[in-house]
Length: 207
Image 1 (cartoon, one colour):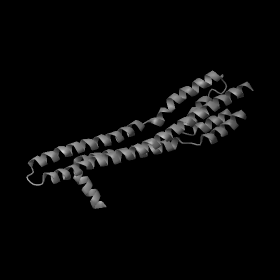
Image 2 (cartoon, rainbow, N blue to C red; image 1 turned 180 degrees about the vertical axis):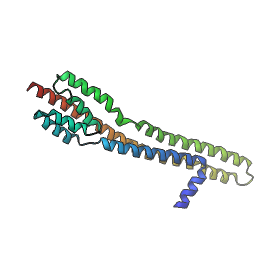
Image 3 (tube, one colour; image 1 turned 30 degrees about the horizontal axis):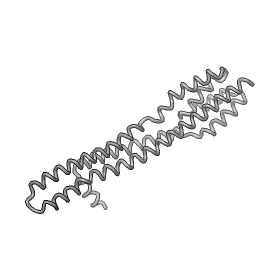
Image 4 (tube, rainbow, N blue to C red; image 1 turned 60 degrees about the vertical axis):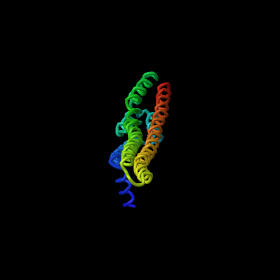
């Protein structure tokens, strides 16, 4: 297996190592983004239930302290609404909306770079194949023996970069889809519990 991989990389030419570097960069970005989103993926229902209980007990300060103890996006947004707990609904909505605009873009940071890496892998693979084909046809023109065999061997090696580029792109795109789904899930949770907090504070103020 090791010999096969070694020959596969060597036969593909220098572009194989470029694709490998791009692939490893993409994996590094995916790993970084995964742990970043993992820190943001808090139990929204549990946090909101705790906050709801404190608000109904008129203990908004304690609810603020709970949110202040977390660096995740959702608690920060909820905290912005809790700060306006004694004001009217419009003020609460404005505070929460502003906080959402400030905080939620962090969830999508670096996702576009991961997509770029996947596309780059494919394109670099195609570029490597074109270069390999150019070299192969040039070699066939100078060959005096079995030109068909020489051309077939050259094309087979040239296709290595396309294959490796596609493998890299498929893996990175799959990871990108998974991470995008995770970010969307957190965004949906933010929208859900932000709306619930606004309703809670509005109703509480009327009571």
